[in-house]
Length: 167
Image (cartoon, rainbow, N blue to C red; front, side, top):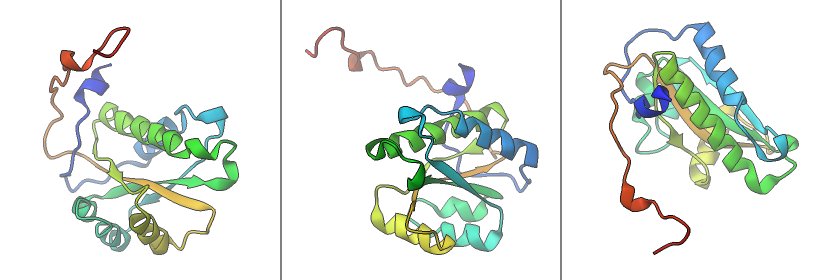
């Protein structure tokens, strides 16, 4: 549970390459996520090319850190795997969260950059990779060795918890 409490959005990274073994562990963690009817609609693009990272950094006003990362993982949905299309975003969100938690476990930092459901962002990323029609873009996760340490911040708010009814 420690990784859940230590996880933070890390936007600044050391100039140090993420090892291939750690990249595979991140992807394995993402693919262990639950999904509706076990449809597992996810696919991933691991981006290390600096020119592509630079292009991805322009997807939104909040994505500039991608250009400074040594690695970003683009989380996709392949519609051909879908049995329950209304749940694909939940599925890929669970995969994104698993990836973020594994990053903390591995001593890495990462940040979730939302792409879906904003069509202009989805189309921008689709254009960079020339993705086919059956592929949707959900999120981008820049990953690297953090410049600052992940520290616990207690976010529990008792006033947001209700028992048996909402009052």
